[in-house]
Amino acid sequence: MSAASATFDAPPVRETASVREWIAVSAAMIGAFMAILNIQITNASLLDIEGGIGTGIDNGAWISTSYLIGEIVVIPLTDYLSRVFSFRRYMLTNAILFPLFSIACAFAHDLGTMIALRGLQGFAGGVLIPMAFTMILTRLPKGQQPIGLAMFALAVTFAPAIGPTIGGYMTENYGWQSIFYVNAAPSLVMIVALFATLDRSPMRLELLREGDWLGIVTMAIGLSALQTVLEEGNKDDWFASPFIFRLAVVAAVFLSAFIVIEFTVSKPLVNLRLLRQRNFAVGVVSNTLLGFALFGSVYLLPQYLGQVQRYNAEQIGLVLAWTGLPQLLIIPFIPLMMKHFDVRAIAFVGLALFALSCFMNVQLSADNSGDEFLIPNIIRAVGQALVITPISAITTGGIAPKDAGAASGLSNMLRNLGGAVGTAALATVITKREQYHSNVIGQSVNIGREEVRQRIDQLSAYFMSHGDSDHAAATGKAIVTIGQIVRKQALILGFGDAFAVVGALLALAAISVLFARRPSAAKPGQAH
Image (tube, rainbow, N blue to C red; front, side, top):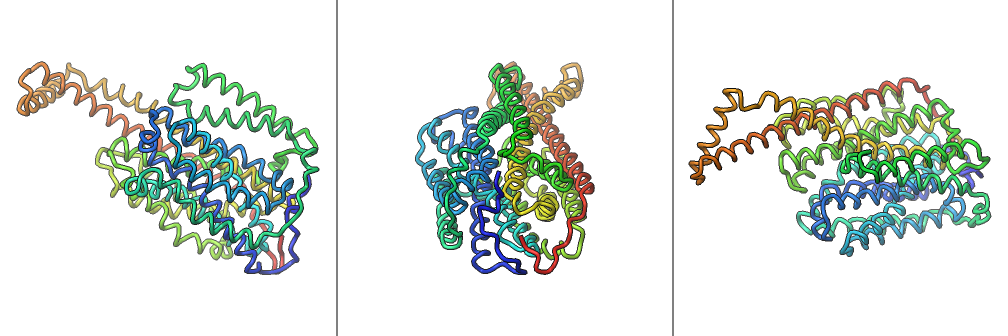
């Protein structure tokens, strides 16, 4: 396909970007932040939303799934469609549609409407993420790109961390509808700034005839099926469900066909040949594993606090705030660190700290509540702050300006897809490991042991002293109580195992970064 730089008029070689260009990049970062924020903002509020629209817990998962499907499908399409309709027109259109679909979600009264509106919101929001990344590579000189990448890192790591905090607070104090109004004011600022700063350029509708339509169709069907399998598989016991099995076959067939098509057509939708570049391949692998950890850790902690400690949405949000707030202080200094230290070393340290924070949560107990997560969350925040900007620099270091859009789309899609895989995989790990630990503990907690019989007698006496006159009924309650204690302990151990999985994958990502070549330092006056 024609160069992504055709979207922009290449700026002259310069050392610093103009104020106008910084305003444009900053506005794009607002869009990326809001789009990523909305992946997680409903997570702490799903029970309230499900009650509000009158649907069950199982069906309510589609409120998040539909948004992710829209986002993951549109990200690879963004580079192509921005050249067809012009960067300015396509960016502004989706910047307007995103808050409109968001506000519309607040008026949904049934599950079908909510799923459709969330899908459309994800489709519009998904455009804003890679286009913000592309603007960094095309609008900023090489020497100032680390600053832009640091801004993008805030969107990628701070937004998921703070999403449940905002969602929980808004839901508890103003109702679940309020979380869909959050996007209105920032989106208005973004739209005005982009309208004033983006250059006008003509549409190139002739590119529609050259489009990789077979690749588009196979990708859309394959990714939609895969995302549905990932989101719904654990609930339906994976391949034991004929529906999940058929969808998995559809995903495998269409995504395999998509990969073959992209390597054979002359103008591919997604330039997979970029993976032949060593640093881009290493960066994409690290980014995908990081996506698994970012989304996975944001999934694990709220689930633990809700299921084990019975925290409400606002309490969960306050605990998670400590994974986001320190990043605001650290990330602005990352570009300065990159001038003095090898970016691979910075990324390695960040991933290692992120992994350490997960390993600190492996030995969970019933006593682990909000306060006990403070130190691990701060370490995690420091690690996340050190990761995204250096990995982005490694990934894009050898990318030519003409490939910026394609590289952005592929990298961002795989990070989000890694997040979807992470959430689904960790849900399965918790379920399976809970069953395993329950069986192991149950072998020790049996009626044949004197300690168990004594505990049953103690609990029976307690229930009889609190209103149960029937000894048999009190004994039954005692046995049920012991069973609940066993299940809770097994669940806690399952969460500990899930944190260990995230830590291990982050350690693998840290090792993979070391295989990258050191990105070349920017020379004075060098620009894209």
